[in-house]
Image (cartoon, rainbow, N blue to C red; front, side, top):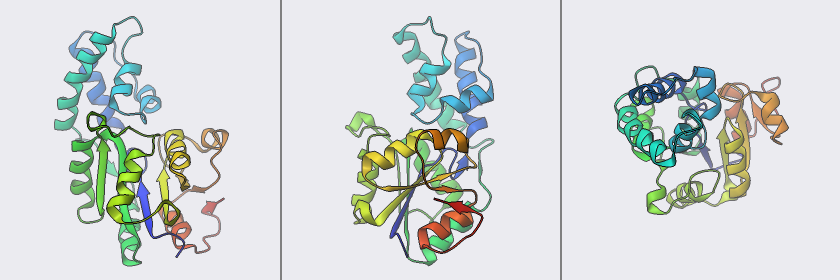
Length: 227
């Protein structure tokens, strides 16, 4: 076994949350009379936390105070509507079960609000994560790509960086792994495509959850994973 722990991103990695994020974003924008955004636009805004999502989705000419007002409305709305269209990616639940069967500890670390991360982790993967950590900058934990939340997960698991791998779908996840001094696996089914991730310097990819398992357990899985 190559790694003792697998730390996962949430949005675009284990859960397809895009439609619910887009719907909540547009509900917030519409509530204040601002133009809506397309799902593809929201896809590009996801990854740096919901505050940044609203900053990018809002019109360019509005003030920081107005952005904050939209963001404060968005938070409770999304929390109440975070699981309307969200679905687990096919094969991810089996991946998590197989990892745990093989003695690999699992965690999810996300820039999504902490309450939403914990809620969704239990709702879709009950008992399959040792720890779930979301954005909590109010407590001094910087959001990804800062390594703070990953370090918190490793501390909770009782492991060091060398024994763990970070799995995500975006440039933010790649930067998080680098900043944490960890190996990475970038999945190709998420919110960023493989050519873009390669242009960011990603080296290890998985096209299927089975390929993620093979990379973590250090098994040959020809044709589905490449480094």
